[in-house]
Length: 377
Image 1 (cartoon, rainbow, N blue to C red):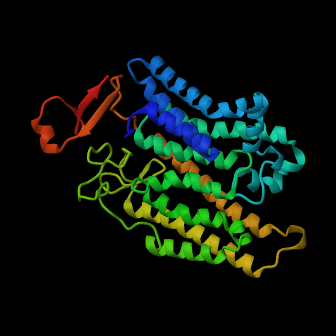
Image 2: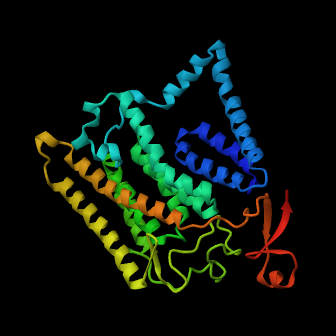
Image 3: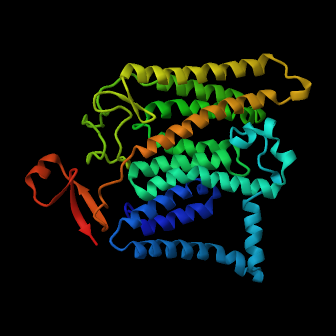
């Protein structure tokens, strides 16, 4: 069990990062969250050094064979890096719903700029897009904020990094679905849009029937629209209300549901009435649904002009790009609404166990929020 064990977690994430470089999409979130936690400890410099040494030693052990094999040295390491980062393919390949591809008809990135220039631009914009989410977790680390930060760092990589694949949209989609109880409308709306963004790739691979079937089943299971109106902060499996920092919530995130204590819907930091909030999400849902249906009909029945043979693929990715921009902005806004966890506020490492409310009222030495201190360094 590695919960709250940051050294073990750093080792495991380093393993994941070296096993599949796609884990880099989440690396800024892990870095910022762990750094924020370390800075709130009693000995922050020691905590940061401990995690830094852990990462360096883990990477060194994993990469040493490439340098030592046949005395390859630095050339062996560079050969591996060259395979991991395919700069020769250009800043994008095929049609992906990110910034570089969506703006290519106007900016003509490949024709106007050399690959090294585009690589530096991609690096700069990716870091710039991930910076607000990282800053929030460094200054106010929290469990829920960490999951939002995973989504936002993944959005930054998908939107701006070099040579993004269409299937990479699944990476920001993962933490968004983890937050389904906190932002149900977002988690319901985004997966079909992600499928629409991958349609050119799926059609090329002959997966049109699988695409239609999967999207139809998903919409049928979800119910064909945004969640129905509910009161309160949501209900847990045992029928208890699960609110922000509720000790009975063991889901790994600490925030409340998308609705406020009186049923208001939280949309981009604004408290809307249930009717207004539902109307906004219904508008977003049906606008993207009708837009996706329209581009599908056009692709099926309208012959593209000879000069723009790939206009339909560009239409799919451009529509999806607009939706992804809105989703990324919403995720960043929601992350900044999350307060820091109170568990580490006193500046020392703690581990906690959950107690029942009756035990909390009768016992002594409780730390608040239904938690009792089990161990402290």
